[in-house]
Length: 64
Image 1: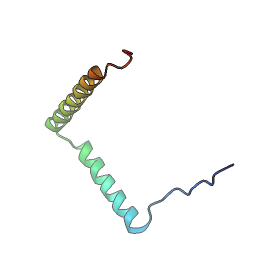
Image 2: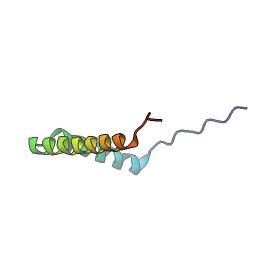
Image 3: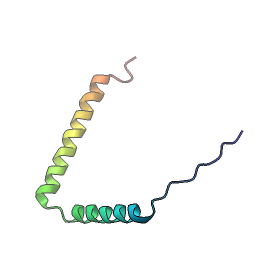
Image 4: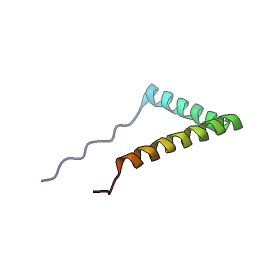
């Protein structure tokens, strides 16, 4: 029994224009980050990975 394929939602009109504008602004902001901002983001990412490693160590996956 086959299920019908739902159509893929597509943004149109003002919503699409607003989405594109915000996406471009975010992209430009990302391109023009200062070295301090890049360093802060890298440090935050490393803290997140350290937290993830601690959680995985506590999980004892594969010990059973």
